[in-house]
Image 1 (cartoon, rainbow over the protein chains, first blue to last red):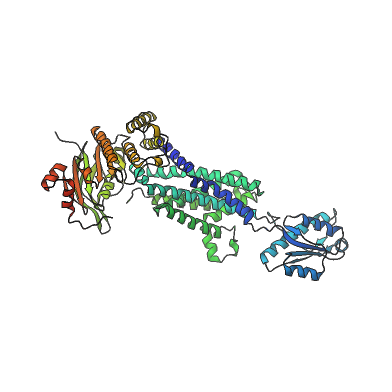
Image 2 (cartoon, rainbow over the protein chains, first blue to last red):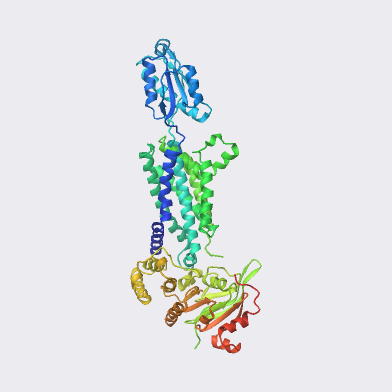
Length: 368
Length: 248
């Protein structure tokens, strides 16, 4: 136990004395969160649109105000002819036009249904879809407030429903993804590099010659990184809930529990990588290659897995990050509990157990 | 009176595929002895030493260290040996005293022992002013003296030194050897590899490895006599003339 304490203390010295490690450990999650949260978002903000209001009545005005109030849109001009709208699209000054026909309010109240025309610049189909979805969501929202109590059958011609993320916020996707990415990357990188460094420096030989149990070498290396990863996770959660308004609807304990399993996976993977190389650079490169690409591609937070061809979907099933991502989304956004995610948690635990056993078995107790 | 045998190797062999790194070496080392293990680069010194330390499993042959078998009793061997690797073996990002505490700690020394030993060690080496400096900032000679002192901190029966004086100046080397003599006087058996022939003169007995074979084993005086040589250098050249393997 005393030996163990000495070893863990030494590991903490390593971490806190190496500016590179510290930067990697704490700089990366912050940078990732900010990058993905603000810069690399698929959310569209301040898009120039035009509202063409031929009706100029109460209902149209209320909807217009709501649209103007949205941070997604920058409403440019107000009254244009169809020709002028076309010109505006051609010159690229607007991305979308919302057109209220004459007597909008009248149709709505007397015939029970009215139409709003949404014209979007579909030369960029993703943006167009997103923008029209935003507009639909706002109109849908207004529609409810326009209906006097007890009256039924008012119908503005849109039927889009976005559950869990009615505002189509990008962070809902990115934060869980970044959590998976950061925990995996940091864990794998830290463990593999720190073990390989001992090999490179020649201190591993000294450790293996000492009566210190080689398995304890692994465990004492894992402990500091395990705790630092949990701190990391806390930083991400605080940042994303304060800066990005990411909700944490479910149990915090469940969230940390699932994260702990993922961290263990990462540590085991790092150990596995450290077995196959003797240089820190190689370890770093392998960790990045092995973690970054698959996690980005197959977790589901950049590219929806449902749209992938079957073989790739099968590949994704072998990635721990995919299951972790599902758990985190369910817990944070939908507020689901153990009952709903136990399957994913079991799968994740299975993978982790497999990797831990494999990597401990492969760890070379002797040098040759 | 029979001298106590602390290392005994019989036809110890290590093969890597077709390559025979050490070929049936047989020798004994007695308690308190300074045993020089000489040879050119690639002659099989380090491989042999790793087998004796339990870092590497022999392909054939037998060996006991402090009476324990290298195949089955490596854990007991580890309790009884110290080791200083060819590469510098302390943590550069830890201070002098942290290194001492760490290595003392993994050998299971008590806090009291650690305290008295580290104080004595720092005094012997004259490192009072450097205790809280990072080891990385010390000159190489001091690092190596410190590494040696740390390797024998737990008072092992045998200490294995793998080319401990590589790259340091003659004065520091001389000081290093003073530390080795001190340890030997305290009864610690020293097993040292080197390719500096002047250092061979400091040993009680030396063995010469050539191409994985142990070509000679005797005291420096006797070796010089039998080879009609004035220095160990000449003995070495005489023995290594037929060597096939080039240094790596």
